[in-house]
Length: 399
Image 1: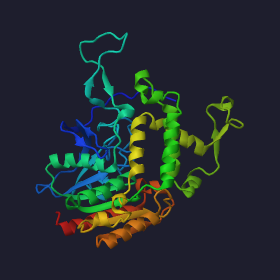
Image 2: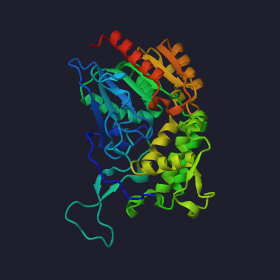
Image 3: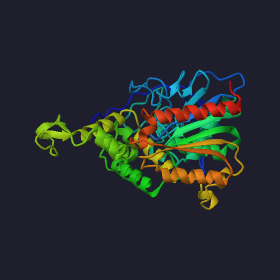
Image 4: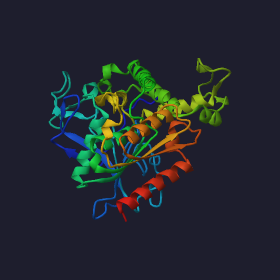
């Protein structure tokens, strides 16, 4: 397992020295938000779309990723002539607060504080050692993430967003945008998501977190001091999560019970006759590639934010109340084989929006690809996104 630390990258960002007052009561300052944009903002500033990324995504939405070299995670959806058409719309994607791709998070310097060298270290004129937040990064919420995004939107001079779109944790951000800043959102498209994180999903996240804690390179969350990363634990966390993103049908179709030669051969105590199942190889690849681009403390921070997400918590469990009087147009999308965020939860959200007299449509896409279907080639989903945005643009009178 590769345990080398990733090289630091310079990301396009905005810095807000005044910071942000978090829901936990901590004032976090300064705050930096990394972002990417695609397309052109209209003269009227009325064609902006925020695309919110999921748990392990980032701002590199529709271009080659600077760390992995792979295409952007939604390159098939965002671009000229694509369902989210950058010939027509100005698309903004931001790395969430708590992330590790340029936005303020556990890897960031703690308030830019420069510390004295540790005992035995030579004193250097510049730069002096800067301490990251690490596990002491304050707990954040989905609402904190959205409020950090709003700082960027305000600085761009955008008074009203044409649309906010996102899947999974991105869908949670979409719902938070619509609930917290309803007058700023003309159209909202929450995809494969829920207005709360279920007990089952919290349980999966906790198993993933415990895998990280159990890694001998965890070092109480201060692994950077040893120039190490808890690679094995973070890889297992990714493997666990990835299983939940797929359906049984998708796993069977892609891998079945097929085997392949185990590259470790007889040296692998779990190998039988020098073979391994293809699904094992796939999950190991997912885990090993993940640790090269993601920070363990960020993973802990963001999964906890998802766990605490519950739009009805401040309203006696009534999901309609956060949307009372809303003029936002909603399109809720779910996938038939998504057992992580099942259609039943999406329908519950649609009913709550109906009780709030919101303009809402609901689409369930027939797919055997599971939760990750919104990231994969699914023509019915593509048509749904294109149709909703085109219809909303006509009502908003966007050229």
